[in-house]
Image 1 (cartoon, rainbow, N blue to C red):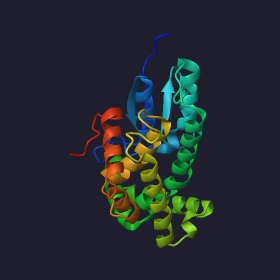
Image 2: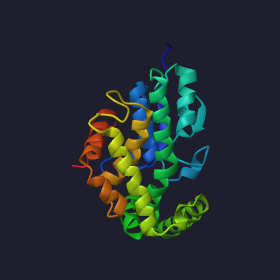
Image 3: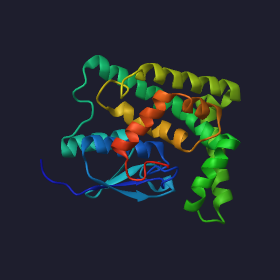
Image 4: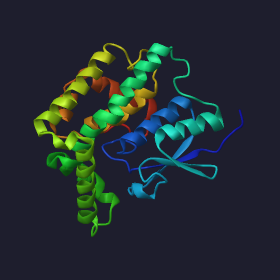
Length: 243
């Protein structure tokens, strides 16, 4: 296999003792570690600068590309590395379903708790503050919260009451607890792509100590706390610990 220069990963700045505060940035970092693809981090708080206008994105030998799944397909084509290639079809299907639950369902609860919930935003906003000019911080964060509220309303989640949103999020957390069981990773002994996105979402909620209901329920699950620590040690050791 030919040698390649490290790819540049553009993601949100670090926070909460994690190498980035972005859950999908953490997902990509974990995937690159599993694939043993060298990379360099470049921090950018304005996701609109990316080719998909969301974070993370990469630069690789003149190619700019956003969306973690498209990035992973790019690496499969250009470097011949692919996650989960050895999974048996039933496990691959289970991983796909779990990833959809996390990325399409739980991610909405995550955004609601981190950004729309006032108590959650008090924590997240302080972590974001150093990355934005002081004078535009109120305007930028106000626009971000209004835009996200509209987005989650159109997707359906923000139409629910806080108690209903909490119930949805707790059910997802409980499903992860049941799936993980006594295994080190969600599909067994070896890590897979679904562990990367689970790590990204869970680690931010755990390490930020968000005072929101689903985050508190998550932090009451010892097996998921151990899972987050295990993934942080293995895939994001640089600045991964908050203590």
